[in-house]
Figure (cartoon, rainbow, N blue to C red):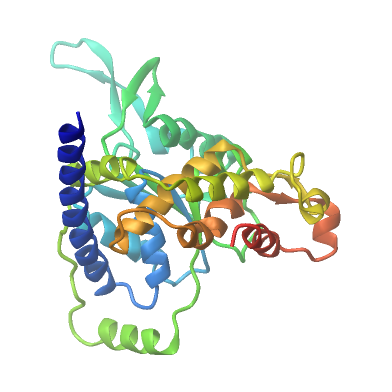
Length: 333
């Protein structure tokens, strides 16, 4: 029995080391096209390795669309983009049935698949669509299938949604409901690049042909990587830290008076699952074979930020969610 376990461990170790090398090349390939967003690239890659969806929050012009296009290329995935607008309907995403007549005059319905039938879907400015249209993504994001015309149709695997949201222009937008926000593994804030990165970007994008990324992984290899990460061992100290962080953010059971006072609601079990997977993926991306407390601390904010809400009085007093998450992180640091 021990020999079998040792063989399995050695096999996993070899696979993990091979994947870590590929992930290093993956980040390098993306970095040739996307400048000054190393943290964003890392967190998006962590999300995909964890099998989840990501919400990118940032002002226009920071390369969010370019990032999705680049990911589709380097991961060998079928990537599509949908611009969300107030008049977008669910059928524009899922597809619709059309009435056709064949050469013999026989009529029948044929389903035309919408853009959601892909592997990497970019939902651009997702909060500009109506709640009805936003809800069309719920089943797809959670179950990787859609119900159309009384039938359940599976989506291609792997399937990931990368949604963008503009934090500035809020007029004419529909805030994402909590149930949909919870389905995003990470909420990533995309900021401005530093001066050196912006200089490099300016030279690279205005002087001749732009660099084209090369494929590093394929869809089946990404699925295998996701399965490999789920087999990574997690130390008890990391597991305890995740549970303490997530459970401590719930005002009903929190020990911190500030949490009890300032939070209206906190993260559910899906947040702990997201942290468990994301810490494993981050560890492997950095060449480590097990996650640490530092991984939990680093990923706490993007995992928890969209799964918590301040009370009305806390918002009136100027309390910020990052400050609350900082207090929670201090309890496990």
